[in-house]
Amino acid sequence: MVQHRLSPYPTPQWRSVWRYFIIGLLWSVLVTGIAAQSTQPVYVAEYEGVLSTYAAGYLRRALHEAEAANAQVLVMQLTPHGAVLEEVRKLANDIANARVPVVVYIGPSGHDAGAAGSWLLPAAHIAAMAPDSRFGIATPLFVPTMGMSNDTQELLLNEQLQQFEVWGQAHNRNVDWADTALRSGFIATAAQAIEAQPPIIDLVARDRTELLQRLEGRVVTLADGRQITLATLGARPFVVEVNLLEAFLIVLANPTVVFLLLIMAGLAFYAEFLSPTVGILAGLGVLLLIGAIIGMIALPVQWLSVLGILIAFGLIAADLFVPSHGTLTVIGVGIMIASALTLFDATQAPGVVVALWVIILVAMIIAIFAVTGVWLALRSRNRPVTTGQEGLIGRLAEVRQRLDPEGMVFVEGALWRAVCENGTAEAGEWVRVTGIYALRLTVRRLEPSELSSPS
Image (cartoon, rainbow, N blue to C red):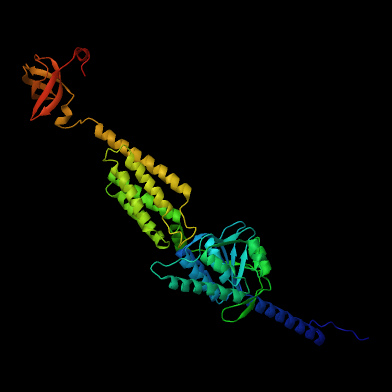
């Protein structure tokens, strides 16, 4: 009988099976790794606020980082609250010439993108908006340059119009509205923009999740002629955050913050003037003023309005010394309100304004501050002098040598030569000091009512 012994080692057939299994496993891991490495990231830049020089710098940095990472797309999710037209035009050119596809998405629903949307949406490789949002302004988008002839102005306008046409042809979008927008103003909602023939924008999405879903499979042609097919379904976006310096500068470039810094600087100098604090308040005022200047660098400031704010503080301060009964303060507050409303050039930066409720609140605070200062000044001005020779006026003095009408009186621990205004006074009587001249007091005898309780 032959006995079969089980070998602890696999047979040649099993070794072949294991070999193919391991090779297949390694191949699948390799393919998965290559596929994972070949998946390009989706970059996102989020911004809400005034599109100033500093904000455009952040968005430009996000674009450069997306290009360096070879991202398959950069989504700029924007909620503009006014924009500096010069900076928006430069940013639009950077977007149009980007080496990665750029999606400009205006949201959330119901937001008005204003002039920023008029420039950035046409320049984007894909233009998207949230439902009920809108873009455009009711005034001309083209800003004339002072000192140029009409022919030159028309040439510049045609150059900008041609730029819109180039973008429209590159992305197969409607730009018939651009001429109207540049010359007289144009506003369109998301529904109007998507329903136009051809459409002004590419798609409408409720949020970023829906936006990434609807971007799946879209083919984008870049400025250099390359075509990229987007694969955004299920992609995890990488958000380019605002760094600390950018956040600080963006806050300073807020028009309301600029106005508040100017006012607080003025109040600090005003308070230092009222009650000197060895320069502490003045130093604080200098810091606040520097912050305001940094913010104004990024915005088109009307310096005549800045001068108006300075004049307003000057009038309020003058009310401390001029008996105007508050008239100068009222005029100063009125000038300050008018200057705040016109602090920024609306033609160069549509929508960049100081919040009206802040202007009203600041005007009330300054008025209260000024009235309090005037009241304190008047009270100190009317308060009787209590030191020096003038402090003797109104005091009671004891007659030491008969006043007929001249004699000696004792007051505040010293003997004084005095002259009685109303008759004579015997030694030991009380008289009241009414004046002082050339080291001689003038006094008067007390009335019977004063004699009962001299004080």
